[in-house]
Length: 254
Image (cartoon, rainbow, N blue to C red; front, side):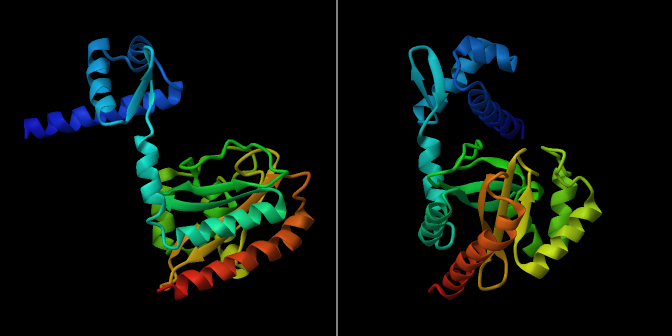
């Protein structure tokens, strides 16, 4: 049992070191040692193993997270039902709207960017593949929540709570439940500066043949361009149309 605990602790430390490298954007052994409160020898030992397996790389004396994670991520991406079709639909949404389009999935109660593309007028919002965040603050995230069983939604809220990235984020459980009921009725969700100040978004869930959500499409952009009228009319029709096509494709795929 002690050896099992020791191996588990070693793995935990290695993962924490990877997280530290991500947070620092790369670091020397001494910088990482100071940041994490670990002995340089301990940090070095873990980095040697991580580098051997491709999980970290070095430039001079600086260590960075390696592309082995991208290799794994690319594999995981393609395990999602009909990923290539999803990619095509996101690309077309980005091109047609000129804004940022994305496909988001839920994992461990968080939203995760599975794929994203930018149109010619899109602004940088810090979104990237694999980025995580509170699921209840995004249009795509709320669209997913609206399709999940109530017991699962409650479990997510109990585990993740309701963080509020902006003053517009929903912080009250009952308000969220009421919002999810509205989303189920109309078939889409909106995000009006709930994730990022000055950014609006609209999203719709994609479900499998059993009615369970596999993720959600969304389009986001600056509030001065994606006005409430544009959000609730032109973009709504476009996003719902593409979501309907994708839903049909996923449900009837062999």
